[in-house]
Length: 285
Ligand code: GUN
Image 1 (cartoon, rainbow, N blue to C red):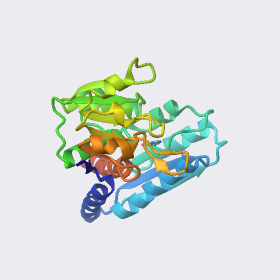
Image 2 (image 1 turned 30 degrees about the horizontal axis):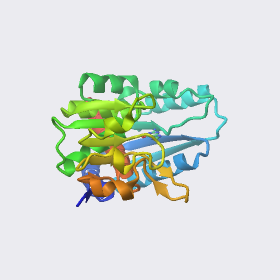
Image 3 (image 1 turned 45 degrees about the vertical axis):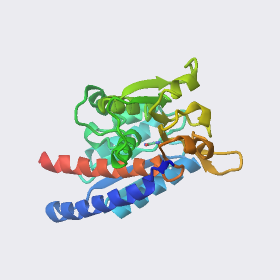
């Protein structure tokens, strides 16, 4: 029998803890943490993610400031906005929802966000800190995965973890975090020769490919823990992950559902990072 790793209910528990903590912080410092969220264009998925982030802020007692721009905003204008938020004493965290339109360099924008406000953990400083094992803002999805593994007492140390996907947002930082947890890590990607052979060796399989039901039951070792990062639409229009859940689940010891697995945890870590940014700024005063 497999266990469902319920990211939604774990998130609700953690968000209640964050809300209790922000209430204490408001007592102590006279204001709540504040997250600025930048959204460019009208990508429906990005709009949904941003709405979820605003709702989570509300549930956690975090103030959210929304900055919505048309698709045609210039890179220069967006950089100016980020710089103004960097200088704003009332803003603790800044997030620019990705992807951005092609005429804007995502790298330039994430590089502009001040490291002390980089609650997404995408800036070169945050990623460098992650690489060298220093305390930093961890990218939200990989950090959420680690929290779920811990919460469900899934052993990581000495286990073989296979990460499928090598994006800067998920695959690469997830591999680094699993390494930090003493897993033996393999990273697979589109040039991997025999993907199924690699994934079948995984005690913990992290799928971050972005293709619906790409990981099939035959690619999974009996008893593996499977973390599905994908949020896709299947042919019938339903939300589904990168893993063929229905057929794969009976082979697993534990598996995350989509929706209700990794997604809510990503947002919850964003909340925790925002509170951390707030506390660090006040501690330095
Ligand atoms: N686009 C997809 N995932 C993310 C995320 O975690 N943060 C931001 N800013 N954009 C994203």
